[in-house]
Image (cartoon, rainbow over all chains, first blue to last red; front, side):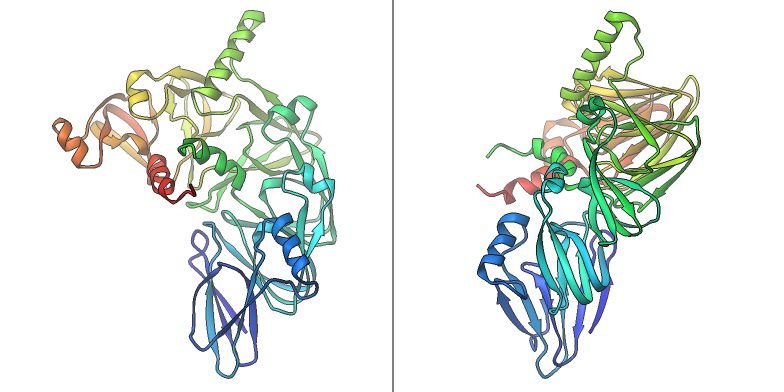
Length: 223
Length: 232
Protein backbone atom coordinates (compact mmCIF):
# COMPACT_ATOMS: atom_id res chain seq x y z
CA UNK A 1 0.00 0.00 0.00
CA UNK A 2 1.24 3.44 -0.91
CA UNK A 3 -0.51 6.68 0.00
CA UNK A 4 0.20 9.98 -1.71
CA UNK A 5 -1.03 13.36 -0.47
CA UNK A 6 -1.61 16.11 -3.03
CA UNK A 7 -2.94 19.69 -3.18
CA UNK A 8 -1.89 20.45 0.37
CA UNK A 9 -2.70 22.24 2.51
CA UNK A 10 -5.91 23.93 1.32
CA UNK A 11 -7.49 21.28 -0.91
CA UNK A 12 -5.61 18.17 0.13
CA UNK A 13 -6.53 14.82 -1.39
CA UNK A 14 -5.11 11.37 -0.70
CA UNK A 15 -4.53 8.71 -3.35
CA UNK A 16 -4.31 5.23 -1.89
CA UNK A 17 -2.61 2.71 -4.19
CA UNK A 18 -3.56 -0.83 -3.32
CA UNK A 19 -1.79 -4.03 -4.35
CA UNK A 20 -3.78 -7.24 -4.88
CA UNK A 21 -5.04 -8.49 -1.53
CA UNK A 22 -4.85 -5.10 0.16
CA UNK A 23 -7.74 -2.93 1.27
CA UNK A 24 -8.38 0.49 2.81
CA UNK A 25 -11.29 1.67 4.93
CA UNK A 26 -12.67 5.18 4.63
CA UNK A 27 -15.31 7.43 6.07
CA UNK A 28 -18.47 7.34 3.92
CA UNK A 29 -18.62 10.18 1.44
CA UNK A 30 -14.84 10.64 1.34
CA UNK A 31 -14.37 8.87 -2.02
CA UNK A 32 -13.56 11.17 -4.95
CA UNK A 33 -12.78 8.50 -7.53
CA UNK A 34 -11.50 4.96 -7.81
CA UNK A 35 -10.28 2.44 -10.34
CA UNK A 36 -13.07 0.26 -11.67
CA UNK A 37 -11.17 -2.86 -10.60
CA UNK A 38 -11.62 -2.04 -6.91
CA UNK A 39 -14.52 -3.47 -5.00
CA UNK A 40 -16.32 -1.26 -2.52
CA UNK A 41 -17.94 -2.81 0.50
CA UNK A 42 -20.13 -0.76 2.80
CA UNK A 43 -20.35 -1.79 6.40
CA UNK A 44 -22.18 -0.31 9.31
CA UNK A 45 -19.65 -1.33 11.86
CA UNK A 46 -16.16 -0.95 13.08
CA UNK A 47 -13.95 -4.02 13.22
CA UNK A 48 -15.46 -5.40 16.37
CA UNK A 49 -18.99 -4.69 17.52
CA UNK A 50 -21.95 -4.43 15.23
CA UNK A 51 -24.85 -2.29 14.26
CA UNK A 52 -25.12 -0.91 17.77
CA UNK A 53 -21.55 0.20 17.75
CA UNK A 54 -22.02 1.80 14.35
CA UNK A 55 -25.11 3.56 15.63
CA UNK A 56 -23.25 4.74 18.71
CA UNK A 57 -20.60 6.15 16.41
CA UNK A 58 -23.17 8.07 14.41
CA UNK A 59 -25.16 9.41 17.33
CA UNK A 60 -22.39 10.16 19.71
CA UNK A 61 -19.49 11.35 17.63
CA UNK A 62 -21.21 12.83 14.60
CA UNK A 63 -19.17 10.50 12.41
CA UNK A 64 -21.04 8.56 9.76
CA UNK A 65 -22.82 5.34 10.49
CA UNK A 66 -21.28 3.67 7.47
CA UNK A 67 -17.71 3.01 6.57
CA UNK A 68 -16.60 1.96 3.11
CA UNK A 69 -13.87 -0.57 2.55
CA UNK A 70 -12.08 -0.64 -0.80
CA UNK A 71 -10.61 -4.00 -1.76
CA UNK A 72 -8.08 -4.77 -4.49
CA UNK A 73 -8.84 -8.42 -5.22
CA UNK A 74 -6.69 -9.68 -8.08
CA UNK A 75 -5.31 -6.57 -9.76
CA UNK A 76 -3.87 -3.38 -8.23
CA UNK A 77 -5.98 -0.21 -8.10
CA UNK A 78 -6.25 3.15 -6.45
CA UNK A 79 -8.85 5.17 -4.61
CA UNK A 80 -8.79 8.94 -4.14
CA UNK A 81 -10.12 10.32 -0.87
CA UNK A 82 -10.89 13.88 0.20
CA UNK A 83 -12.28 15.29 3.43
CA UNK A 84 -15.40 17.47 3.47
CA UNK A 85 -13.70 20.59 4.76
CA UNK A 86 -11.04 22.71 3.15
CA UNK A 87 -7.82 21.88 4.94
CA UNK A 88 -4.87 19.60 5.29
CA UNK A 89 -4.54 15.83 5.63
CA UNK A 90 -2.10 14.03 7.86
CA UNK A 91 -0.87 10.51 7.24
CA UNK A 92 0.04 8.89 10.54
CA UNK A 93 1.86 5.60 10.69
CA UNK A 94 0.02 4.11 13.64
CA UNK A 95 1.74 1.65 15.87
CA UNK A 96 -0.26 1.41 19.07
CA UNK A 97 -2.90 3.94 19.98
CA UNK A 98 -3.96 7.43 18.99
CA UNK A 99 -6.82 9.59 20.24
CA UNK A 100 -8.60 11.41 17.46
CA UNK A 101 -11.11 14.26 17.54
CA UNK A 102 -14.19 12.51 16.13
CA UNK A 103 -14.74 14.59 12.98
CA UNK A 104 -11.09 14.33 11.89
CA UNK A 105 -11.12 10.64 10.91
CA UNK A 106 -10.85 10.03 7.13
CA UNK A 107 -9.59 6.47 6.68
CA UNK A 108 -7.33 3.70 7.92
CA UNK A 109 -5.87 0.30 7.21
CA UNK A 110 -8.83 -2.07 7.88
CA UNK A 111 -7.10 -3.96 10.69
CA UNK A 112 -6.99 -0.75 12.74
CA UNK A 113 -9.78 -0.77 15.27
CA UNK A 114 -11.69 2.48 15.61
CA UNK A 115 -13.35 2.68 18.99
CA UNK A 116 -15.65 5.35 20.31
CA UNK A 117 -14.10 6.40 23.54
CA UNK A 118 -16.11 7.87 26.33
CA UNK A 119 -14.41 11.15 26.96
CA UNK A 120 -16.64 11.87 29.91
CA UNK A 121 -17.23 15.31 31.27
CA UNK A 122 -13.78 16.33 30.21
CA UNK A 123 -14.80 16.48 26.58
CA UNK A 124 -18.27 17.77 27.34
CA UNK A 125 -16.89 20.86 28.99
CA UNK A 126 -14.41 21.24 26.22
CA UNK A 127 -17.40 21.77 23.97
CA UNK A 128 -16.52 18.92 21.62
CA UNK A 129 -19.28 16.46 22.50
CA UNK A 130 -18.77 13.48 24.75
CA UNK A 131 -16.74 11.30 22.48
CA UNK A 132 -13.43 10.95 20.82
CA UNK A 133 -12.25 8.11 18.62
CA UNK A 134 -9.50 5.81 19.71
CA UNK A 135 -7.55 4.17 16.90
CA UNK A 136 -5.77 0.98 17.93
CA UNK A 137 -3.52 -1.15 15.77
CA UNK A 138 -0.73 -0.92 13.24
CA UNK A 139 -0.78 0.68 9.81
CA UNK A 140 -1.56 3.94 8.01
CA UNK A 141 -4.19 6.25 9.49
CA UNK A 142 -5.48 9.25 7.56
CA UNK A 143 -6.77 12.31 9.44
CA UNK A 144 -8.13 15.62 8.22
CA UNK A 145 -8.06 19.09 9.67
CA UNK A 146 -9.96 22.32 9.17
CA UNK A 147 -7.01 24.47 8.11
CA UNK A 148 -3.34 23.59 8.26
CA UNK A 149 -1.96 21.06 10.73
CA UNK A 150 0.64 21.99 13.31
CA UNK A 151 2.46 19.06 14.87
CA UNK A 152 3.64 19.82 18.40
CA UNK A 153 6.16 17.71 20.26
CA UNK A 154 4.96 18.22 23.80
CA UNK A 155 7.79 18.03 26.31
CA UNK A 156 6.56 20.64 28.78
CA UNK A 157 2.94 21.55 29.57
CA UNK A 158 1.05 23.09 26.66
CA UNK A 159 -2.38 24.71 26.50
CA UNK A 160 -4.68 24.62 23.46
CA UNK A 161 -8.16 25.76 22.59
CA UNK A 162 -10.43 22.69 22.41
CA UNK A 163 -11.80 23.61 18.96
CA UNK A 164 -8.33 23.30 17.45
CA UNK A 165 -7.59 19.75 18.63
CA UNK A 166 -7.04 17.07 15.96
CA UNK A 167 -5.30 14.15 17.67
CA UNK A 168 -2.85 13.26 20.41
CA UNK A 169 -0.78 10.33 21.57
CA UNK A 170 -2.03 8.45 24.64
CA UNK A 171 1.24 9.19 26.46
CA UNK A 172 -0.17 12.69 26.91
CA UNK A 173 -2.60 13.46 29.65
CA UNK A 174 -5.05 16.32 29.47
CA UNK A 175 -7.18 18.27 31.84
CA UNK A 176 -9.82 20.84 31.01
CA UNK A 177 -9.07 24.05 32.81
CA UNK A 178 -10.27 27.59 32.96
CA UNK A 179 -8.24 29.90 30.72
CA UNK A 180 -7.59 32.41 33.51
CA UNK A 181 -9.79 34.21 36.01
CA UNK A 182 -13.56 33.50 36.04
CA UNK A 183 -14.09 36.80 34.23
CA UNK A 184 -11.73 35.73 31.44
CA UNK A 185 -13.34 32.30 31.29
CA UNK A 186 -16.72 33.81 30.51
CA UNK A 187 -15.73 36.79 28.40
CA UNK A 188 -12.41 36.05 26.73
CA UNK A 189 -14.03 33.89 24.06
CA UNK A 190 -11.59 31.16 25.05
CA UNK A 191 -13.57 29.66 27.93
CA UNK A 192 -12.16 26.29 28.85
CA UNK A 193 -8.92 25.04 27.38
CA UNK A 194 -7.06 21.71 27.23
CA UNK A 195 -4.02 21.61 29.43
CA UNK A 196 -1.71 18.86 28.13
CA UNK A 197 1.04 17.31 30.25
CA UNK A 198 3.45 14.44 29.71
CA UNK A 199 5.47 13.73 26.59
CA UNK A 200 4.14 12.94 23.16
CA UNK A 201 2.85 14.33 19.92
CA UNK A 202 -0.14 16.59 19.54
CA UNK A 203 -1.76 17.69 16.26
CA UNK A 204 -3.52 21.05 16.07
CA UNK A 205 -5.63 22.52 13.26
CA UNK A 206 -5.17 26.20 12.40
CA UNK A 207 -8.91 26.92 12.11
CA UNK A 208 -11.81 26.32 14.46
CA UNK A 209 -15.02 25.02 12.79
CA UNK A 210 -17.23 26.56 15.47
CA UNK A 211 -15.69 29.98 15.04
CA UNK A 212 -16.01 29.80 11.24
CA UNK A 213 -19.68 28.88 11.65
CA UNK A 214 -20.07 31.83 13.97
CA UNK A 215 -18.96 34.17 11.19
CA UNK A 216 -20.79 32.69 8.21
CA UNK A 217 -23.88 31.35 10.04
CA UNK A 218 -25.46 34.69 11.01
CA UNK A 219 -25.20 35.83 7.39
CA UNK A 220 -27.23 32.90 6.09
CA UNK A 221 -30.97 33.34 5.57
CA UNK A 222 -33.25 31.83 8.23
CA UNK A 223 -34.67 28.41 7.40
CA UNK B 1 8.85 40.34 20.72
CA UNK B 2 9.26 38.00 17.79
CA UNK B 3 6.43 37.04 15.51
CA UNK B 4 6.06 34.49 12.77
CA UNK B 5 3.25 33.88 10.29
CA UNK B 6 2.68 30.19 9.56
CA UNK B 7 0.54 28.39 6.96
CA UNK B 8 0.12 31.33 4.61
CA UNK B 9 -1.99 32.04 2.60
CA UNK B 10 -4.92 29.66 3.11
CA UNK B 11 -4.88 29.13 6.85
CA UNK B 12 -2.53 31.73 8.28
CA UNK B 13 -1.69 31.49 11.96
CA UNK B 14 0.55 33.85 13.94
CA UNK B 15 3.01 32.80 16.61
CA UNK B 16 4.05 35.48 19.10
CA UNK B 17 7.10 34.90 21.23
CA UNK B 18 7.02 37.23 24.21
CA UNK B 19 9.87 38.12 26.57
CA UNK B 20 9.10 39.00 30.22
CA UNK B 21 7.52 42.45 30.36
CA UNK B 22 6.11 42.24 26.83
CA UNK B 23 2.47 41.73 26.00
CA UNK B 24 0.12 41.36 23.04
CA UNK B 25 -3.54 42.28 22.61
CA UNK B 26 -5.61 39.65 20.80
CA UNK B 27 -9.17 39.51 19.50
CA UNK B 28 -11.36 37.40 21.83
CA UNK B 29 -11.62 33.75 20.84
CA UNK B 30 -8.60 33.72 18.53
CA UNK B 31 -6.13 31.86 20.73
CA UNK B 32 -5.11 28.43 19.38
CA UNK B 33 -2.49 27.44 21.93
CA UNK B 34 -0.12 28.92 24.48
CA UNK B 35 2.62 28.20 26.98
CA UNK B 36 1.36 27.45 30.49
CA UNK B 37 3.06 30.55 31.95
CA UNK B 38 0.88 32.91 29.87
CA UNK B 39 -1.62 34.94 31.83
CA UNK B 40 -4.69 36.30 30.12
CA UNK B 41 -6.40 39.56 31.02
CA UNK B 42 -9.79 40.27 29.50
CA UNK B 43 -10.89 43.85 28.98
CA UNK B 44 -13.57 45.69 27.06
CA UNK B 45 -11.07 48.10 25.52
CA UNK B 46 -11.39 51.87 25.40
CA UNK B 47 -9.19 54.49 27.00
CA UNK B 48 -11.67 56.62 28.94
CA UNK B 49 -11.18 56.78 32.70
CA UNK B 50 -13.59 57.32 35.59
CA UNK B 51 -17.03 55.87 36.12
CA UNK B 52 -18.70 57.55 33.15
CA UNK B 53 -15.66 56.92 30.99
CA UNK B 54 -15.79 53.22 31.79
CA UNK B 55 -19.52 53.14 31.13
CA UNK B 56 -18.86 54.78 27.77
CA UNK B 57 -16.18 52.14 27.03
CA UNK B 58 -18.77 49.49 27.81
CA UNK B 59 -21.30 51.06 25.42
CA UNK B 60 -18.66 51.21 22.68
CA UNK B 61 -17.87 47.54 23.30
CA UNK B 62 -21.56 46.72 22.87
CA UNK B 63 -21.65 48.69 19.62
CA UNK B 64 -18.52 46.89 18.40
CA UNK B 65 -20.04 43.52 19.21
CA UNK B 66 -23.56 43.99 17.87
CA UNK B 67 -23.08 46.49 15.09
CA UNK B 68 -19.40 46.26 14.25
CA UNK B 69 -19.07 42.49 13.84
CA UNK B 70 -16.11 42.41 16.22
CA UNK B 71 -15.86 40.93 19.72
CA UNK B 72 -16.84 42.90 22.74
CA UNK B 73 -13.67 41.90 24.56
CA UNK B 74 -9.96 41.98 23.94
CA UNK B 75 -7.51 39.65 25.65
CA UNK B 76 -4.03 40.71 26.71
CA UNK B 77 -1.46 37.93 26.97
CA UNK B 78 1.46 38.46 29.35
CA UNK B 79 4.12 35.83 30.14
CA UNK B 80 5.06 35.39 33.81
CA UNK B 81 8.41 34.16 35.14
CA UNK B 82 10.19 33.81 31.81
CA UNK B 83 9.41 34.02 28.11
CA UNK B 84 6.30 32.45 26.61
CA UNK B 85 4.51 31.92 23.32
CA UNK B 86 0.95 32.29 22.09
CA UNK B 87 -0.47 31.04 18.77
CA UNK B 88 -3.32 33.01 17.25
CA UNK B 89 -5.62 32.29 14.27
CA UNK B 90 -8.69 34.12 12.96
CA UNK B 91 -12.03 32.35 12.50
CA UNK B 92 -12.17 32.86 8.75
CA UNK B 93 -10.14 30.91 6.20
CA UNK B 94 -7.45 33.08 4.59
CA UNK B 95 -4.31 35.04 5.12
CA UNK B 96 -2.94 37.41 7.74
CA UNK B 97 -0.71 40.44 7.35
CA UNK B 98 1.38 42.46 9.80
CA UNK B 99 0.83 46.19 9.33
CA UNK B 100 3.37 48.57 10.88
CA UNK B 101 2.00 51.87 12.19
CA UNK B 102 3.92 54.88 13.43
CA UNK B 103 2.78 57.75 15.63
CA UNK B 104 0.34 60.04 13.88
CA UNK B 105 -0.81 57.33 11.48
CA UNK B 106 -4.23 55.79 11.56
CA UNK B 107 -5.54 52.61 9.96
CA UNK B 108 -9.22 51.92 9.24
CA UNK B 109 -10.19 48.24 9.36
CA UNK B 110 -13.31 46.44 8.14
CA UNK B 111 -15.35 44.70 10.87
CA UNK B 112 -14.03 41.27 11.77
CA UNK B 113 -10.52 41.72 10.38
CA UNK B 114 -8.68 42.72 13.53
CA UNK B 115 -6.57 39.89 15.01
CA UNK B 116 -3.86 41.31 17.27
CA UNK B 117 -1.84 44.41 18.11
CA UNK B 118 1.12 45.50 20.19
CA UNK B 119 0.26 47.51 23.35
CA UNK B 120 1.20 50.86 21.74
CA UNK B 121 -1.79 50.69 19.40
CA UNK B 122 -5.04 52.35 20.43
CA UNK B 123 -8.23 50.85 18.99
CA UNK B 124 -11.40 52.85 18.56
CA UNK B 125 -14.79 52.10 17.05
CA UNK B 126 -15.63 54.63 14.40
CA UNK B 127 -18.93 55.48 12.75
CA UNK B 128 -18.50 54.45 9.14
CA UNK B 129 -21.46 56.40 7.85
CA UNK B 130 -23.94 55.63 5.16
CA UNK B 131 -21.27 54.72 2.61
CA UNK B 132 -20.00 52.00 4.93
CA UNK B 133 -23.51 50.60 5.53
CA UNK B 134 -24.44 50.63 1.83
CA UNK B 135 -21.04 49.17 0.98
CA UNK B 136 -21.95 46.28 3.29
CA UNK B 137 -18.97 46.89 5.53
CA UNK B 138 -21.23 47.54 8.54
CA UNK B 139 -22.12 50.77 10.26
CA UNK B 140 -18.98 50.82 12.35
CA UNK B 141 -15.37 50.41 11.37
CA UNK B 142 -12.39 49.82 13.63
CA UNK B 143 -9.79 52.56 13.80
CA UNK B 144 -6.25 51.80 14.98
CA UNK B 145 -3.71 54.51 15.76
CA UNK B 146 -0.38 54.81 17.55
CA UNK B 147 3.09 53.40 17.26
CA UNK B 148 3.46 49.65 16.86
CA UNK B 149 2.37 46.66 14.86
CA UNK B 150 -1.06 45.38 14.01
CA UNK B 151 -2.17 42.03 12.55
CA UNK B 152 -5.25 41.81 10.36
CA UNK B 153 -6.82 38.84 8.61
CA UNK B 154 -8.42 38.50 5.22
CA UNK B 155 -10.80 36.08 3.53
CA UNK B 156 -8.52 34.62 0.86
CA UNK B 157 -5.16 36.12 0.05
CA UNK B 158 -4.30 39.70 0.96
CA UNK B 159 -2.71 42.24 -1.35
CA UNK B 160 -1.20 45.59 -0.41
CA UNK B 161 -1.73 48.43 -2.87
CA UNK B 162 0.07 51.76 -2.76
CA UNK B 163 -2.60 54.19 -3.80
CA UNK B 164 -1.31 57.37 -5.38
CA UNK B 165 -4.10 59.17 -7.11
CA UNK B 166 -7.23 57.11 -7.36
CA UNK B 167 -8.10 53.43 -7.04
CA UNK B 168 -11.39 51.55 -7.17
CA UNK B 169 -12.14 48.37 -5.26
CA UNK B 170 -15.18 46.20 -4.76
CA UNK B 171 -16.77 46.88 -1.37
CA UNK B 172 -16.60 43.23 -0.31
CA UNK B 173 -12.86 42.99 -0.99
CA UNK B 174 -11.66 45.89 1.18
CA UNK B 175 -9.70 44.86 4.31
CA UNK B 176 -8.10 48.03 5.67
CA UNK B 177 -6.55 51.32 4.58
CA UNK B 178 -4.55 54.29 5.83
CA UNK B 179 -6.79 57.13 6.95
CA UNK B 180 -4.74 59.44 4.73
CA UNK B 181 -6.90 58.06 1.93
CA UNK B 182 -10.34 59.46 1.25
CA UNK B 183 -13.02 57.09 0.09
CA UNK B 184 -16.47 57.39 -1.34
CA UNK B 185 -19.08 54.91 -2.42
CA UNK B 186 -20.25 54.87 -6.01
CA UNK B 187 -21.75 52.59 -8.60
CA UNK B 188 -19.37 50.37 -10.55
CA UNK B 189 -20.14 51.72 -14.01
CA UNK B 190 -22.05 54.62 -15.36
CA UNK B 191 -25.64 54.34 -14.33
CA UNK B 192 -27.76 51.83 -12.47
CA UNK B 193 -28.06 49.40 -15.35
CA UNK B 194 -24.30 48.85 -15.70
CA UNK B 195 -23.95 48.44 -11.93
CA UNK B 196 -26.63 45.78 -12.04
CA UNK B 197 -25.48 44.03 -15.24
CA UNK B 198 -21.78 43.94 -14.40
CA UNK B 199 -22.42 42.05 -11.17
CA UNK B 200 -20.11 44.51 -9.44
CA UNK B 201 -22.76 46.75 -7.93
CA UNK B 202 -21.18 49.22 -5.55
CA UNK B 203 -17.50 50.04 -5.32
CA UNK B 204 -15.30 52.19 -3.10
CA UNK B 205 -13.32 54.88 -4.86
CA UNK B 206 -10.14 55.76 -2.95
CA UNK B 207 -8.20 58.92 -3.55
CA UNK B 208 -5.05 60.44 -2.10
CA UNK B 209 -1.87 58.68 -1.01
CA UNK B 210 -1.65 55.71 1.29
CA UNK B 211 -1.77 51.97 1.68
CA UNK B 212 -4.82 49.85 0.93
CA UNK B 213 -5.15 46.12 1.56
CA UNK B 214 -7.52 43.97 -0.49
CA UNK B 215 -8.67 40.38 0.05
CA UNK B 216 -8.93 37.91 -2.82
CA UNK B 217 -12.36 36.56 -1.77
CA UNK B 218 -15.66 38.15 -0.86
CA UNK B 219 -17.71 36.96 2.12
CA UNK B 220 -21.10 37.87 0.68
CA UNK B 221 -20.26 35.85 -2.45
CA UNK B 222 -19.57 32.84 -0.21
CA UNK B 223 -22.91 33.35 1.50
CA UNK B 224 -24.84 33.55 -1.77
CA UNK B 225 -23.01 30.44 -2.99
CA UNK B 226 -23.81 28.39 0.15
CA UNK B 227 -27.41 29.57 0.59
CA UNK B 228 -29.01 27.56 -2.27
CA UNK B 229 -27.21 24.43 -1.02
CA UNK B 230 -28.70 24.62 2.48
CA UNK B 231 -31.31 22.02 3.47
CA UNK B 232 -34.85 23.33 3.61
